[in-house]
Length: 141
Image (cartoon, rainbow, N blue to C red):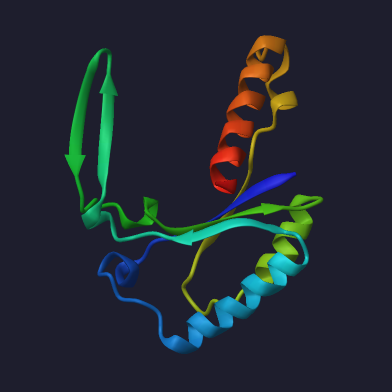
């Protein structure tokens, strides 16, 4: 199963305050462990919401809202995409992450094609596979 591990934003991440080099080093070691175990598929930190935008959809109207966004508890400072056998395995990996007090991390399972049932027709499955192949092809070049 794939899970997204979501690192919540806080006042420091929103202020653009970067971690100290010691935390970068510890996080690098942790990411190496994840990669060697075949768990880590992707992982990135995100710029503060002041550099972001939101697009609100209402019928055919699209409204662009510039950051910063006020609800910091809803903001994301970074993420990983992991391949694990179970949610319990994801939790065990996350417990080893070099975070300290106050950091909040959320783990969410990623939908797979079979999770969508009959509504996800064979034609839609083929389309998704073509898209995945195109993405892989672009990464390789």
